[in-house]
Length: 110
Length: 262
Image (cartoon, rainbow over all chains, first blue to last red; front, side):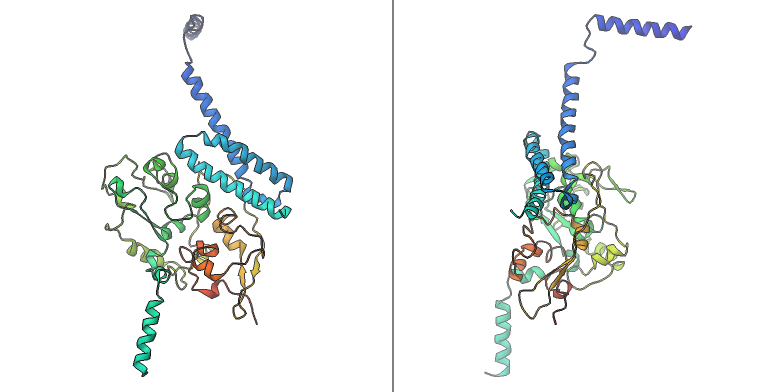
């Protein structure tokens, strides 16, 4: 019985806070969450592309062209990172791209 | 011209032909593959960093550092700073005070968190400081298979016999990849008739380097499409990017030129 009363009190308090428009989650928290999500996005894409370099000889020219295109699309997103991360990941992305383009060239003879 | 005069002239000629490239090759085994990193250290009041390849290659593949962590293959080109280390990049990928290797925590880089001239800083910023690189190398070398030249260790045999197990993946830094499918070995025809062809092992090289260390930056070529010479290799191109600096030197001809010629 005592537990039930306690839960009811908490629920009422929470409802009052929401109705009163109290900023339970501030804009800053939303912004930080969005930024973290955006960071994860570029890194996931980076990891997905660069995880394929060791298999690159088994891809078709079209698959390789698509991967090179994804590298080019990712580059501007990495360029927006802060200086040190940008420097490291641009170089790493360039190495992936160069290898994929190299394998593509060796397959197509261009 | 008597015998003595001939000897003197020969010695003079030898000395005259002894240039920087030759001097580079006469390195004590414990200093072979040593890199002095002095981009910013002195300006920050610290001694330049002495990086010993032998310490690191016993524990990690070349690929892990030169691809995943992103160290350039050219001396001084990475431009490592305290800020990059502090953010967990470059040296700070492992030297962060958290990463463990063989159950031991790897010491953190001194990235503005420790006082200057601290013993921690001098573990790396050690040029002209009291470090026992030679003694540590001798202890390490005692257990390793030997081979001539370079730092006298047969790294390939050390790896294949399990004496060293270089790590190729660093959590939070490396990308998960499937195991590499090494391309077939092939022969590279020697440019001169008296020299045996090179039997190039993709398998041996791919274990340490993966694909991206060599292609396309060092070898932007298709097999047989470009001919490169020992002079180019000697000047630090192609095989010479690693061999003569960290991997065994090119003076050891028959470690590469193993093909039957006659």
